[in-house]
Image 1: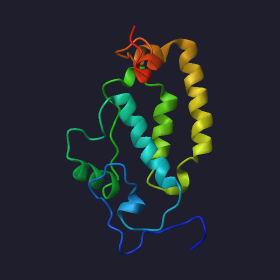
Image 2: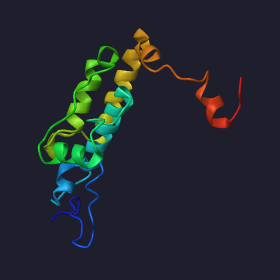
Image 3: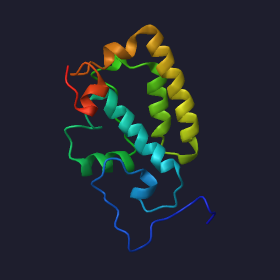
Length: 144
């Protein structure tokens, strides 16, 4: 096994109820850093949809659908406000083949381009309607 590959030890229990586990970890196969990109793709999906993949399905069932049956959720609620470039990136992040998944360096470059494009057209402003006037105020506890 090369230095950039890993496999969980036989004494390590895999949490098969976690929706964010990559298929190769779920199946106890050799894996690399791309498992984190897989999880990140599911998180991006959740950010835009507002709920976890396959909601309201139980997480263990959703993990099984994703890892064993190769199913992926479709964009539904906010699909009109989700840029096609982001959908494409999410699809690449959760690709069943680890070698197809982008590196995080590639993800960052692509997200920067997507955000710049969306900001220029005012799309993200309409997509994320935050319940507070300023994220800084919410985090710091300062109220308007």
